[in-house]
Length: 175
Figure 1 (tube, rainbow, N blue to C red):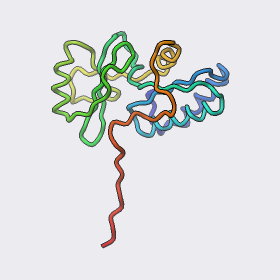
Figure 2 (spheres, helix red, strand yellow):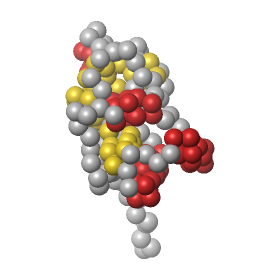
Figure 3 (spheres, helix red, strand yellow):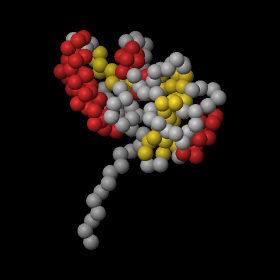
């Protein structure tokens, strides 16, 4: 959907308008990320709430499988924060190589080996990596994939696709 968490009000408005226009869903598909931590959690939580309210089937899929492009195979890179980046490969709208974490130097080497074979997309601007174009996951493509009978989905309980264990900052102890 390409929206930042601060636009969640607009997100919920679109969900309500979609339900008015098309009625109760039979199947709900949600992009599981990787992506914005808050945005992905909002999307997954909303999908779970809608599933409970509508009794529709609920499935999840990596958002990276729904990048709008003509290529059958492509790579996706993203900023994983804390001085790291992720790299994943998609083939036939299926996650062929799950996101792996890399330093900037490691990612440059990996991109050099992929650049001549497949297109490389980023979910946000990463100007430090040459030849990477920005593309966002598409809700329309996710919906199309949800209609495919032979597609392998993640089934409930759904969780956002985390790239690493949660980082918890603990308060300093009084001395």
